[in-house]
Amino acid sequence: TPSSIEGGNFPVTGTVSLWVTGDFTTQGSSNTIFDNYATGRNNFFIRGTDAGSASKIQIAAQDDSGSGYLAVVKITVLDNQWNHVVVTYNTSTEAVLVYLNGNTTPAASLTISDASFTPDGQLCTIGQSWLGSIDDVAIWDAVLDADAVAAVYNSGKPFDLNYDRGNYDNASDLQAYWRMNDGSGTTVVDSSTNSHTGTLAADATF
Image 1 (cartoon, helix red, strand yellow):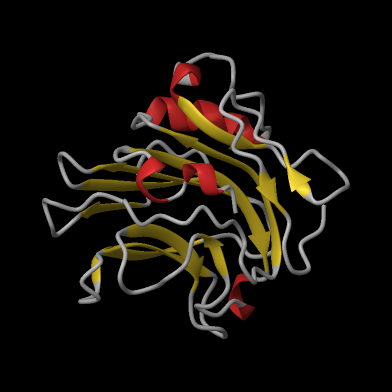
Image 2 (tube, one colour):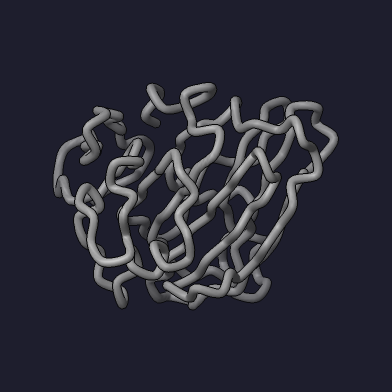
């Protein structure tokens, strides 16, 4: 949990990108990929769905009133294979787009149902109780366009996002970037220039 980018420091408008694998049919809603569900704060989260269901994950925005989701969708993913998931959010236009595995056509397009929503209660917790692996988590304070998303996917071969490459021209917008290449120890280095070091918790291992 790299606290320096939590809460009000989390980009008000931006993009979250990550790679995730596991047996998605066994993941319950408490198996979270990014942040988690909790009433009383404005945040985005990505998590499993009900265990025993199809191979899906859920992406949602919720508000601090505890009244429910402002935007929510379940998307089908590839079971026991690496999936590249990108969520872009623009709180000025209330638009949320979800991309999967480099496809320039969004897997989901959502509208946030509250024009005053900002993710000021964000917890940057990665993989809480997740039964699988997560890699190359990146956060930008800009909305990546579809061509940039496809470039980041790079046919399934992650590259160093600190440098522009092809249609990816958002290196200067990178706010946090955990490549998960540390290999040992209890910390996860932020490979951006912003020093948002993460700490391994519970049974997380490289």
